[in-house]
Image (cartoon, rainbow, N blue to C red; front, side, top):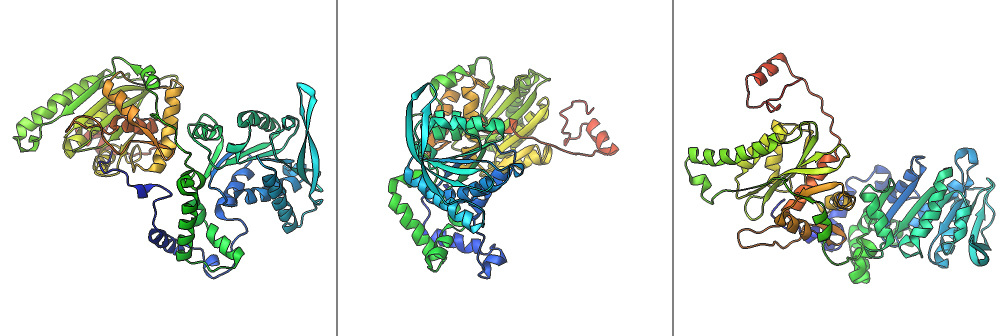
Amino acid sequence: MSEAPMSASSFSGGPVSEAEWVEARRASLLNLPQAHADGRLPSLLLPYQARGIDILDDPRTRVLVVEKSRRIGYTWGLAAHAVLKASRAREARGMDVMYISYSQEMTREFVDAAAMWARAFALAAAAEEEFLFADADPDDPGETREIKAFRIRFASGFEIIALSSAPRSLRGKQGLVIIDEAAFVESLKELLKAALAFLMWGGQVVVVSTHNGDANPFNELVQDVLAGRKPYAHVRIDFDQALKDGLYQRICLVTGDSWTPETEAAWRSQIIAFYGEGADEELFCTPSEGTGAWLPGPLVEARMREGIPVLRWELPADFLHRPRLIREAMVARFTEEVRRALDRLDPNRQHALGFDFARVADLSVLWVLALSPTTRRETVLVIEMRRIPYDEQATLTVDVIRRLPRFMAAVFDATGAGEYVAENAQRRISLSACIAQKLSVEWYRTQMPPLKAAFEDDMVTVPKDAEILADLRLVQTVRGVAQPPTLRTGDTGRKRHADAAVALALAYHATRISVLEYDYQTGSDLDAVAAGDEDDTSGGRALW
């Protein structure tokens, strides 16, 4: 892992000055399509609104989960999709649309938007109407509530119904269900159970919301999707992404104001200041944090196994000043210890590697996972290196990869100087199977949930080691994203920075990558390999 702490400006929203925003938006104008640059009107839907509709138009999309910033007009775009769905004939995949949210005002706003779209599309639709929806309890038919609802009927025979609560009668309907501001509705889990029944007959479910805390069922749903537990489509649109896609430009178009990067930057700062401490959650799709470590101690300990080798290598501070033969002997001793551990690996299993780099303050950690017949990721070797020069780290890493049975892939932290080790592996092993990964908040956002899911589902094992346990417990949820802390722990000169946790995350990521590689070797190449050429990537194994 890069030893430079992650700066606040690396986050997608929040600590970006007006001047930085102006510069970024001016740069973005250089890539504007000519249709926009010459003053012609843009498309009706903004890009982030259109992307959601494109996903829903794909017949393979059954459920779409959307994290969004507040008040970016996403529901307005969904109303357009609802009209197009309800106005189609059954043969064209038309269907009823049911819109549900937590307030009557939102349902009225949705049906008004749908009526506007119907007029704009010149579709045959009856005028919007209010009616009473009977919310009956199937277990107690006598318990029936009359819910005020809104409806638009189309010549296709389908209709749009907008409801202000989660009616039990949803179970008797069929079509497209839109659950808006899902983090705020009552009993989201029960509502989803009823809505997912629509999928059996070709329906769709859209769950869209601003966040309302990290313990909310909506955030749990998002984490399940990111972790791969739920096979749903996922979209995330924060305030800055909406602005880059033209939100404020569209506002200026409606209000008649003139748009400039400076006025947009000032407006952005004003909106963020308005939400204050709640801006991260309301605007930037980061649920307010809970407390405690990302991985509970008992959960980590339940996945620990004895007997997994953890090899620690530390060289003296004056290593480079010692004679060459002494340096080579010191390296050779540790290399032989690593090779003995590698010789004990199961030759029938696939292996992947993660490498978190450091040189001075932190540890470099090399983590090897083996894929079991049940696809559990089992740790088979961990190497920790402290004060090891670049060349020695690079040489050892290549030696390990060459000796891994059925090598799958390796992912390297290339945020800083670790790129040198990554490039060396790419040159010596494979450009496609050795991935140089720049660690970022977005990477942690997408790659840490699958790792946590593996811990929770007993699909990963780790060594029974106190320091590795401490590293895994160091990972914290920062602004809604699991990542290493800024502060280091440990004694002076031997501090840790969740290095093992990052190496494990990189290795787990490597097991989920599909690598296809095509190669060609001439007869002279094979002769060189047989003669023991230093660039032999077979590790001495038979080529065929």
